[in-house]
Image (cartoon, rainbow, N blue to C red; front, side):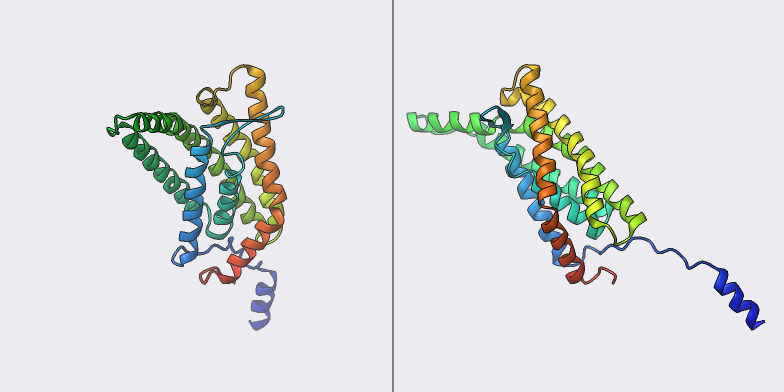
Amino acid sequence: MSSLQSNASATTPAPKTGPRFAAVGSPYFGILLACMAVIVILSNIGASKGVLIGPIVTDGGFFLFPFAYILGDVISEIYGFKVARKAIFTTFALSIFASLTYWVIIILPGFSDDYGVAKQHALEDALGPVPQIVLASLLAFLAGQTINSFIMVRLKARQGERKLWARLMGSSGLGEFVDTLIFCTIAAPVIGIAGFGMFANYVLVGFLYKTGVQYVMLPITTLVIGWFKRHEPSYAA
């Protein structure tokens, strides 16, 4: 009987273990979520300004926004898809709140002297387009980051802890393309981008830049994820 049991145990494959993720009870998730929300809100403000650097057409939030995707990669790898989705929804709930706050600030009666009128016009010019920018960012980031996070987690289910670089690179391209296309389509009229050539420039530059930043930052992102895996108490070893 014992030999039969040993033979059976030898032929029975070991049960597969799912991908490891951490719980959100530690302070680390809150810090990541806060940083993502601040980056997205500031990017929305900056995106209301069109930027022309030589032949390159972009907006004022171009240098900051890719880091929101990098934080999304970290959250997806450490905490999983469900938590990443909650982070996305929370970030944009805060973005909507910020946009409503700008609207209230603009409609509040200001001083009637020349300085007060000038400040009112400046606020309207700077923050007035932000609601449409937030709408563009909401739809774009919701779609792009969800795709990015979903691919990250699905690849992790297949690869386990191995090939983190492949997950980071594989998820970035499609997510960033969807994000850039949706955002540029909605935000271009507000920024002042007109004509197909200028629009195509805006989309192409945005996509290449965002994806390029993520690829360049790949070694640092890998180190950051490794640090969180070692220090996050609930991440199973």
